[in-house]
Length: 471
Image (cartoon, rainbow, N blue to C red; front, top):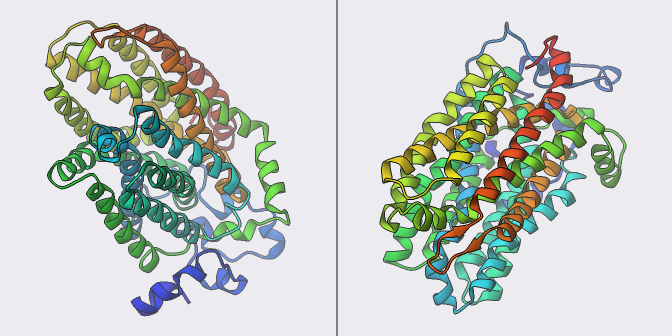
């Protein structure tokens, strides 16, 4: 019986043992996928031949309604909210550094270890979870890892020394690093390709919302009470999301009908060994490495190289974040209307131009800094959203979870690598200004151009299945 049909107390009591236990008789009783292609009963022989076109989201169907049902709209909002809490927990650490380090009496080096621990733990957990990702109902997978993520955040909230904080960041990364891949697998299972750009556009606004709403609110709480309250607030939001997922969200288990008799290790190897997956992972590596190279030094470059007063720094992030919130759905709609790959190319070109301009700027006015940042974010979002939509169409239905988990792991590890490479390139003047920041720009542009070419070959099989030259 679905958990939301029980009483709320009973549901919460039975929740832990329901996370990862899947009964065969439940699979046939539950409501199927939202896509029309999944609403038909199939024989066991037909099930063995199922692919994305037949059991889950079709590659493309111009005749299918392009709007969202009420439940789909709710689901998009719920997934975006989970991403908001996940991203906020990750990015809030850096702004809290000035408050947290003296409070716990830790060095800058120790703080750096605590920040990077999340990324490396997330990268490792993605690989470990890949073999199991397609063996369970995705709703239960989301609940399991979300509860673990929340527990890690509780440890951060209770931390009174460096070691507890480090443990909290590791636990948060181990569980939080898988949530994004589960969300992507759910979107891929429930939405056809011609709608995924819009879905990804809405979900990606979580990143901008965390900057516009989450970080300022977190700093306000930290300044008026203490830094622990920031993590307590994230725990509260996460518990609300967990309850909503458990009681309202429907199971996502249609992929279980495609299961093969492989153990988790064999399933992982089968996913990694696919040549078309390898190319997709390479593109993810290029995009993540380039994207994370600019982030760690953005504030220092803006203040010391562009000459923007530090009091105006929140204004730049606020305006850029607001534009990103508006741009996300628009870019998603454009990728559905004009094609994912053409939109991705547009994003790569715009971001490359703006990165070159940004990394070569000298002292400028606040308005100029805002305009350049906004246009750069437009380019970044214009490549991020269609790239995720394209990536979602690559794996077979029975390997979506493992593919997404490995992709998320590659993204996290590549982001850490990008930060390390950027730190090796950049040098600091005595006045705080950065040297060789333009070289980072060249590396970012090069990675963007290579990924643009590689993505063409990634999307070719997808376009071939859709009967088009490109999608």
